Length: 165
Image 1: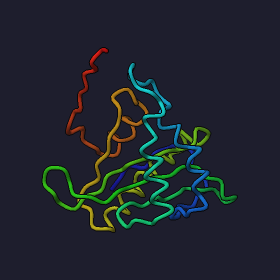
Image 2 (image 1 turned 135 degrees about the vertical axis):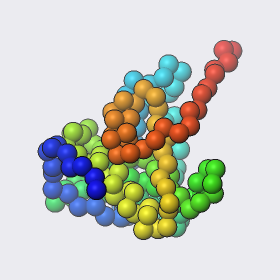
Image 3 (image 1 turned 90 degrees about the vertical axis):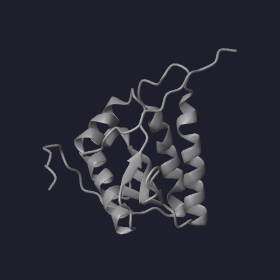
Image 4 (image 1 turned 120 degrees about the vertical axis):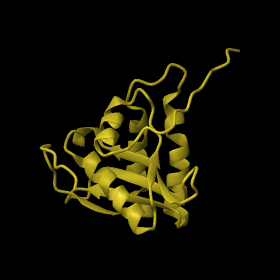
């Protein structure tokens, strides 16, 4: 059983995203770069591939990726998740990968990130996944705090060396 937090809660509903939600979700994508970026990283590079996947998912409805939205009673988007069902990297067991989790800045600190992450886990398990993986930048401390509190293990390290031109 998961420990409950004492964070402020907000009324919300989580539902599958529809094509008409695309614009609201696109506005949130730059939040993926809202932390102290590594020196040679361009902020837009952090979310442009998610943009393409999001557009594809909402307009073509592929069955391997799903997008769910948290919204308030007025229909305002508070945040969203995008998850792709795929094999686990090493064992090849059925798995899922958290492509994106975003909480709108004005709703951070409310516990909504935890709610969305747990929703992603439950939705992935209901689709047959035996694990949920994700990528996170080393400097994204806010995300690390959430993932560690929710039992994620930092299993692999991706290193990069830039060649000066």
